[in-house]
Image: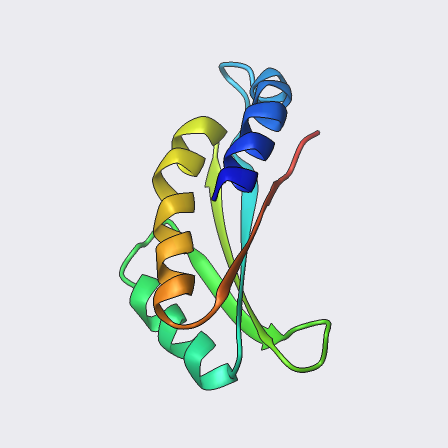
Length: 107
């Protein structure tokens, strides 16, 4: 978790600059990996009650894990990350998965 906190502290100022007031909402993607598609699907069900999130499960690039890709739109990346990142870290950990970080669309 410290690694992601440091990464966020370094990147967020640049992202905030790119998302000035009045900016259009940008996509923010979160990457969670699980050992099976069944577990990834279970995680997907657990976040399905949030209407702000979309998600999909697909095979991971390593050929053995499964990615749960979660996407939302935001004009305030700091708020989104402070709210969702801990939730996704806990979700992944509770199901034997791994939270692998986030990325945001910048124009």
